[in-house]
Structures are given as C-alpha cells and as structure tokens.
Length: 219
Ligand SMILES: N[C@@H](CCC(=O)N[C@@H](CS)C(=O)NCC(=O)O)C(=O)O
Image (cartoon, rainbow, N blue to C red; front, side, top):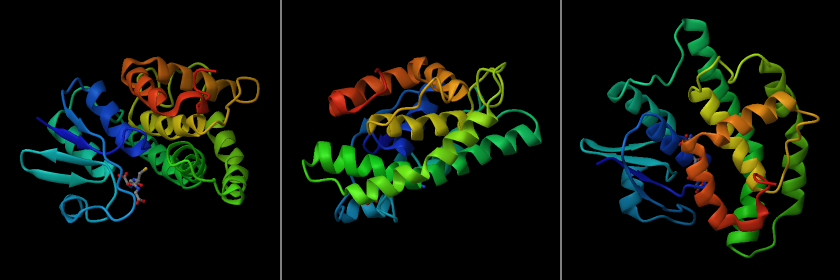
C-alpha cells in the first residue's frame, strides 16, 4: 500500500493526503517531523530533507508536486487538473502562487503553531509581524480571481490549484489569523466549501486535536 510520510500539519503533506482521498485511494500515514537533523534513512528518501515523501512499491518519491504528478499518472480519475490548456495552466499557476504565499504563511505558522504551541518556545514576533504584513496582497489577488457564480477557481469541481490554495490558507487560520467574509466574501465562501469536503474535514479534525484553541478555522 502507498504510504505518506510527514506530519499532517504540513500543507504539502496535507495536499497529498487530500489528493489521495479525493481520488479514493487507500494509503498508510506515518506522521514525521523532519526538523533538526533527520536520520540518514529519511534523507535517502528525501534528499532535501523535506516532507512529504510517498513510499511506493517502486521506491520513494519526494516533493508534493512530483508525488501529485505520479498519482495523476497512476490514478487518472477523477482528474487533478481541468480540461483545456488554459484552465490546466491556470490551476498549476495557483499552485505556484500558493507556494509564494507559503513563504510568508509558513513563517507565521512555524512561529506560532510549531515553536509557540508545540515546542513551548517564544515565537519570534518580529518575524511574525513581517510575514503578516506580506499577506494582504495575496488575499486580495485570490479574492479577485474567484467568480461568485463558480464554486471553485476553475468551475464546479475542485482541482489541484484549489486544494493547494486551501491547504496553505488552512495553516494561516490554524496559526490564529482570520479571513473575514466581510472583506473577502468569495475567498471565505471558497474556503468554507473546500473545508466541508470530507477530504479536508477529516484532516481538520486531526489538526485540531494537535492545535486545540489556536486555530480559528471553526470560530
Ligand atoms: N516543495 C516542497 C515543500 C515541502 C516543505 O517545505 N516541507 C516542509 C514542511 S511544510 C518541511 O519539510 N520542512 C522541514 C525543514 O525545513 O527542515 C513540496 O511541495 O513537497
């Protein structure tokens, strides 16, 4: 059976688990935090020492984009990317945009959730404030990209771009931040629809047992 290695709180581990669940594929999960100096055995599977890793019967695969490409080639239905070259390209672009957003969101999450909540250390508030200041243009862009008449970015079906944006923004909420329906009605509606899907709802339940009251996702 396929095995996902990596802590489910990572947005990149989460997006792999959600893709597997949306495709209806059973898998094992080994939660693993790679921080510090991970063992050589892990670095052989993941040369950059990052999670996720997917263990397959042909060998390990690192990097969530590589893993999603593998899953799409092996299990093409339901499709991860929409039909049509432009729609396909736009969904991949959203993944790249979510990665740029992660550079800032990940700092807030790391300082507050990992350092502050899990490791019981003082968060670096200057780093948090600098990262928070970088977020509003990302939220404004995503709000503008959504069309109120469509459920998701590309239409009525969630694709990889939708999953990736929602996975990164879930950690923004898990870190105690808010995305308000007053200021970002389309983005808030999109996130609520994504988080109601069973694939996300199951992950959120697990996350909340670890994060407790820090997350605003259900508040
Ligand atoms: N581009 C990579 C990013 C993976 C990544 O940044 N993983 C983080 C967790 S969110 C990690 O393993 N960090 C460990 C470290 O920086 O030491 C992917 O999509 O898999």
